[in-house]
Each structure stands twice: as C-alpha cells, then as structure tokens.
Image (cartoon, rainbow, N blue to C red):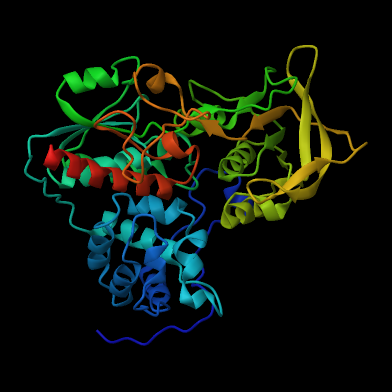
Length: 465
C-alpha cells in the first residue's frame, strides 16, 4: 500500500498523565498512542535499506519491517514481525533504553528527533493484546528438557526461544510470582503488572512450565536438576543482592535498599492501605544513587506521600546513568536533585530512627577507568540534610547461593558468573548463564539479548549431543 511520508522533525507526542496528578497515584504515566497517532509516527520512518536501527537492537528486531506494517495499519502483521525476535514486546516498548540503542542511530535523528521506535513497539503489543488472535500453537515436543533458573527477562527470553523449538522448558522462580525484576523491580506506573502477566501467559501457552517458590541452591541444586533429566540449564537469576556504602547509620529504622523498598511496593503492594507488608512512609526522603532504580524509588516515595524527595548523587546531572525520560519525569513530578553531593553518615534519633543525612559537596576531577570524571570532595563543604528516610540505590550483585552450591562454577571478583563468550556457556558443561547474573545490574533488553544468544547455543549443543 502506498502512503505519503510524515516529514515532521519531531515525534508524535505521547499522551501522559499530568505530573501533579500522576505523582499521587500508581497508574501508568504514559498513556500510549491511538491508532491514528501510531500510523502518523510510523510514517516518519524512511525504511532505510541498511537498517542501522536493527544493528543497534540487542535482540536484532527488523525494526523497519514492523514499522512499515504499522504505517499501513496492519497492526497484526507488525506484531507477528516483532515476535519473531522478542517474547516481551509490551515490556521492551516501555522500559528499553531506545534512546541509546535503536533510536540513537535513526537517520531521522540527524536533523530532528528519531522515530519513536519504542512507542510504536508498545502500541503494537498493546493493540494485539486487546484485538489480536489469542490462539498460540504449541510446538511438537522434541523430548528434550531444559531448566531455566529465574523468570526475569533473560530467563523468559531463553525459555520462549527454546519452547518455540520444541524443548520442554521449566522455569524455576524463587519468589511466589513470575517475572523477576519485571515484577518486583519496576513500578506499576512504568510497567503495569497485568502486562507482565499477559506476556508470561503467552510463554505458558507455548508450553513453558513455571515453578514458583523454588530456590535453586536450597530447594534444588543444579546437579540435582541434571539428575532429574534436564539436559541443559540456563542461569538467569539476576543480581538482587543490594550494596550499601558502609557508612555509619545504615542500620537505622527508615533505611532501605532500593531493592527491598521497590519489592515491598511492586510485589507486595505496600502502597495499598490494607497491605500486610506495609512500608515506612517518609515525609522527607533521600534516595542515594542516580540510575533508573533510584528514579523508580524516588518516584514511588513521592507517590507514598512524601513532601520532599531528594536524589543524592555524587556526580553532576550530565553524568546521571538513568534514562533521560525517567529523569525528566522525576523532575516534572517534583523530585529534587542534589547532585555533586555524597553522603558520609546517616543520623539517628534517640529511638533509632533516621532524622538526617550528613554529606559533603563534590567537584569533578580527572576521568576514572570508566571514562567519567572522578568526583572529588570539596574541603570544608560538610552539611546536613533533614530527612526521615534514606533509600540506598548504589548497585546490586548476584546472590552467592547458586555459585556456592554448584561445584566448578567459575565467578569473578564481583560474584558474577564467568562465561566463555556470547553463547553464555559457563565453566560447567551444559550450564549456561546470562543477564545480570553475568554482567551485574544492567538493562532488561541486554538481559534479553543474552537469553536469546544462550537459547541458540543450547539448541546447537543439544542437537549435536
């Protein structure tokens, strides 16, 4: 079908809740495109022959192909094209950092804004969930069993790709609900949990079995899984062990790791009045860190009723590792950024509760090994910030349980699993790994890319076994 290009320099705007409305509820911030908006945005795509956007996608989606289908209103064809490459399109469309991946090389971005690839992926997935054919054809079993540890993005991607090839896949999840970081880490206002459940249901329809409340390394070991007839194992257990600064006062009441804070809110619904696992609701909250998790924690604290929420980050706004969109949304919602500031002590009252934060001001010096300018303390710059809650969001590492119960499984000094190459093969035969368990805390889409590579490698290994 012929159509005229849309040569607007800017993206079709995405409707959103107003900032002073959304910062008081957990409903999704971005409301999504209408059909007309999606078609209009898709027609901004030039359908480049060399497809630079595809080369920057960690799971290799043929982006011009699915966008071309949207441009002519064939949303079902667009969905079928997307799902050749990704098992979680509705998730990726919402949380993938497109601005540093596919959209960063979009030709339309040279003289204007890139095509809204993520917005279109989200639209297509949402449209199909509401309007598409729900029947999923379960592949014929090839009789070979594969175990997947962890139901986060890496594990779900591995499971989906292998199930499509006829493998009998069982996913073992430690928590009571599948989804991993998609369920416990990312707030409802960024990623509604009904969407996660729908994506997982599609995998179950393919034949993937999900066993919750199963802690590998405690309930079962990897060796025991092998004895049960699983011919290969994929470890996608993530990096859920929080880090702290080691400063005085971190054991006070009102101090959380971002992991615990977000898990209580996202998985246990602590924001609901009748919650059985309530969370401390600070009125003046400091969130230490500058990544996406820090933004999520700060925005959740605001929604829980905090009057003032601070992002305390030791570098400048230019070095914030969080997505630009998340920083902009946080600023719109009233989050206060205290950059070039580093905590030195959490102050407690006589009852053991947080009453303040001691900190020093910083300046940027020479670049460190990561290439970012190293923050240096400004002498005599000590000050106190009045807060009644502190949330630490300075990174996570893999839980040591699996490596400590699996002989011969090699890890590095940070506790991450060591793999030979992109296949994800570990130091143990038939044991593969990917996602945050290997890389440390990273993005959903990079974990999915690792899962996709591992699934292909496992398939090759078992076909030749």
